Length: 249
Length: 148
Length: 221
Image: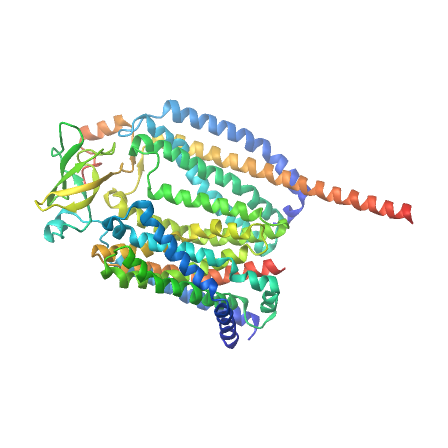
């Protein structure tokens, strides 16, 4: 694993993957949204507004997936002091927050025709709101220190505490919402979805995954370049100092 | 105490505590939970009128009556065995319909009618094209909505 | 063990010398709760219905208020470094600090809660469950808060950051705490809520000393 701690090697690898990831993103999202908007049928109860689902559900998956990815990267960073893992966690957090936000907005747009309100304290939507706050806390802590290394370390600990807490939060919010809603007790055996609606959903989900990969690779690369620039700046300043001393001496 | 041994003690203690937590959760889930009451429970032990209650069940088919001003509505909530008349004044959620699950929050009135302050409805978790549902209904295999 | 007792005793002595801090949290607790009737109106039925929720939320905020100084004084005067060097495992030291924090913040809040229950016309049959739930829930607030306090040591705007980190993690304690009291007031059984509150406390009892110690180590390095 430490083979890829070398920035040059990582950059070479990232450059090789990036074109495929970027093209894959465009193709998967294009096909997925085309199927979702034009081919897939409307729902028997919800009509056309069910199409929001094709953005809403994959975003929700991504928001959860990325938090787990951050936690894994944080564990790697804390245990093996792997520098790229820190960068990966830092690069992922805003993307995850973006997906959580997208889930909330589309959920709210979906809620308008379905529930009759823009916001319903529905169990899943509420959990997503809390997840969004967890992302914001992670991002804020990352940027709260003069010394970026401390930010990485603190944010990594927070991410691990967060990932242990997410199931507890999820459980408690579900508990709370069944107190206030007829959700789980009225339900049949689990959610069911027709194949004609499942395919577009999965394709969009793959597109989102590839998008995440593209953005994270790009962001890590730019962080590496920024670090190189800082090092170069320092070197020039040092060289100038040495020269100045030499002239004086 | 060596470092290794200390770590071992920490791990054992942590596992014991986690075990305790699991036991607590399992006991809690084992307790039958009165999240909301069914019509049968309500009929069996009528609560005092000042106590707020969550009444849950299905809207009985053919019992929804809307008043002429369109604001008040009355219906019966059933669990298959018993049913309770409910009156409600306000705007119903879109997904409120006969045969659908609802939760009503309110009080038991003195005349045996449940006066709801709030009516909650939720769509079921089936995402299906309309044609499929129609086909299913035709062949008699449709088990959504009304069969709980 | 002796080291732990010494640490707790020291923190308690310090808290007693500056008892204004503990009083401030209680004062904040009562004062903030007293604002609610102005916000929602003085109707007794309404106040009685929302009393458990208000008491819990306000208790949460009062604990939050006291978190920043949990490690900050020790961090600034260097005693935290001494603590790191002492033979007492840092995880235990964190537990000791949390215990002292709970004794000086959580316990006074629980003592003040009946006053609020009376002010809000809460049915006093639910008071026992409310106090029991707070007894189980407030240690969780101190434990989780300690991690937030340790993580933000030396951060820019650390005091503002703590609520953002800690409040989302407080949600389970809030839900089960209010749930228990509400259930008791409705005449339903509060047992499952209390059991779950206890389970959350146990899980936090393991996680937070580990995370808190790790956070303190990286703050000192």
